[in-house]
Length: 484
Image (tube, rainbow, N blue to C red):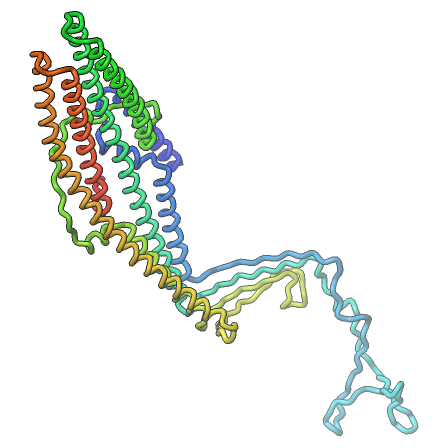
């Protein structure tokens, strides 16, 4: 009952946490760490991986039990239609009398009174006296038969099979844990991608709104100038077309943002229509730091769960060779039994229970199996070689992945720095164009070109800023140092 209460309490806590999140999500911005925790808590694949870890732990405990003696009970009941009779009919046995003269026993037979010789019947002497054995004396009631057997088996030497199975179970548990950790990091990476995608589109939406506001202001100024006769209808149509295109772009960005929020909510295990804001939507970006291009690959291999998983898999296949070899070695076990039956086989098949103990040693020595066990060993060796090659290939790919991730992170940093400088120039260019347009020095086309350049510079800065974030996450994932 205590377990059920704990489960019920856990479910209540989960429900309350989700309710509290829904209640405050509209007011409180959600951080990246909060999204990660919710994703890790609600992901179905991660829960499957957790169950696999539990199953591997139970398998390990099961393998450990092979070291201890096993006790089994076998019981049988059988109903027989007929009884058993050892005699076909009543039997007559000849008797003997002790002869003092010869000091031996002699059969009592019928003799000829004249000659004293035994009288024969079909070549056999006729007994003078007999002992009667009635048929009923050798009939046994076996209509209801009960048989039971309690067996205790203690392995002494199984050719190394028990140890190999325990080692395999231990590595399998570590493999399941490593795969669970890999799944966790993959979920965190997916969450970060979805999170920064939303942040990127939020800033893109703000940018589109700012650009639309600029064009709207320019459109009003051009309309005033058309009324004053200092601008043409062509200028007005050009600005109106740009304004309409900007409004269409704003609508597309708004739709894309809504879909991205749905994707993030699904990853976090929330309703897809949940309304919440992210912490980085309103915060200024911390200046990104340039990443080094070289790393200690041995440390990387130690941190990567994929390498650990393949290492455990290789060890499992090595132990499978020992498992295959054990089939070719002798096996020794101690055996103790207690058997009982009714009818009692030890007391004239009397209808009662009785039994006995037996203790012995069982030895099995494989002699000839036509290469079956030997070929199992060769197959296990091939699997072990394949696992080692897969591990070596994985290390090569990880090294390439780390170098590529470090290069991309460094390039993202440089791109971000250039985007910042380009945006400064675009801001200055737009300011000069607006001043020149107001003074009548520049045309509408010049202002539109400056606004377009400013829009592209802003968009490139947002992309570069988000790219640095994603490259940092990808590099941490490649290095195996992702913090969550």
